[in-house]
Length: 237
Image 1 (tube, rainbow, N blue to C red):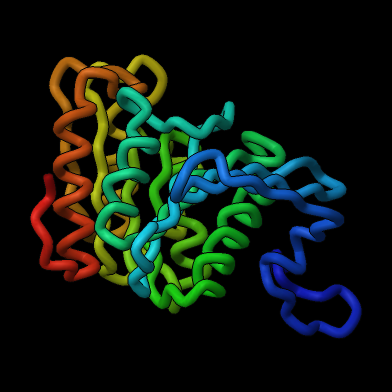
Image 2: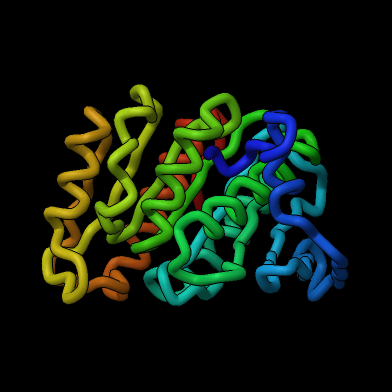
């Protein structure tokens, strides 16, 4: 049964329906940075939302961690940096903290709910980014929400869970993988790209699973890639 299928009548529920939010609260941590907590029967979904201060475009980004969760991403807190970069250019960006890390079905619901929230604020195109386990979540949700997700970025992705990558149907795919990854070999990204049938793979020399040495390169390339995919036409600083 699909994640959004109603067991009783067969009607499709939205990801937020499936999430089953019992209560939520939020607070502004700083201008343009909102912290949201959503309480569900299967755990707490946390979101850091980088909101453009001067008005948002109709595009957005959702960033996801690995099997252990987390909000900072690879590199040197790359997700935080990208959130600031993107929101400064009018692109809202979310960082999500899994309810049940390493549970593929639950995490796909979390990610799909985040996409739905982005769409609900006026975004009609969303890029998904995921590190390690989160890369597989990004691929799966992009395939399932093909009308909403316009591109995928993965960092040291696992291949397990990406068997559906062919369903990206040529949508932009950008991948980074260290050639000294101590957890997942670079062949994992190569397999995913082969299944997808297209995509750009950046092999980062001498770097490991966290891609700690490649922060600056990844920041520059991801920002430029997003500009291209979203056709922002603005220079990356």
